[in-house]
Image 1 (tube, rainbow, N blue to C red):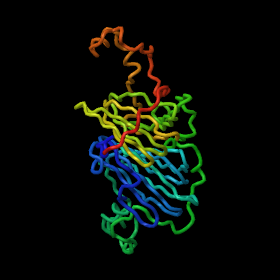
Image 2: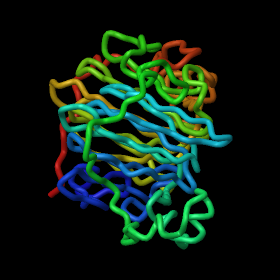
Image 3: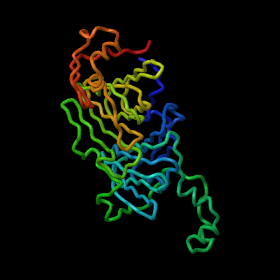
Image 4: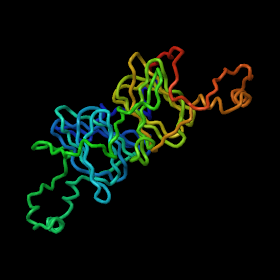
Length: 349
């Protein structure tokens, strides 16, 4: 087992990009994990009464998954289209690149989010910094006010998380269905087996998605994610709970095998073969993000069906009679039963 891996890091123990008494923002981008391509990830923690200041992403659509708490999200997009809705644990929201949005903790407990962004080096602007960039006269002209109306503005660098001074202003319509909102964990799992299940936040079920998606996977000790690869998408995973082992084959035929635990982030580039299995008795819950709205994969099971036994025997330089009796598999199952005991867990010297 490798002690260090180019594919993995921790989102929980990484140094926050911003932190104060109201919460924190932690970012894993290509600066932290250079193998990332077209995806990055943030962890946002908001204490009760805290607000993630209004801002917009410059170069990335964003998906947010609520791990805990209750927040209000407001979005102003192209054509002055405005949305405001409530997001709770297990629910998701989508913000298009360039749309200004805010996140506000309206509950009595800490709120925690995992955010996936559709760029390995995301950039953003804040409302505060954008207004501060303009003179008092320009702002006065913009809002039909005298320049003196903006003399008291604090033009110091913005704080990413600020305090709400009064009660939360929640619109009466915030609890209604919204195109930007998706109840990921409320979805009846489209893929369900005795040893695992998958909930799919992809364009097939969430029309707002264009170039990003997420699978919520739960794998039990009796199952395993079959070895596979994704022909046209990278895979970025976040471990919400449990422990697993993952093995990745790199193009130079080196193997990278590592253990995953809560808070870990991994990335597998497009078309790299890999597999995941549970270590221990606890189920594992992954949030897996893709850089496509409808990700696909090719699994080892269907691959063995796609080619004749003569081709397989020649490829492995062995008599056809010695090949295993591969099961006929026209469609890969995503999960497979783990009938054999797991391989021993190796640790680095």
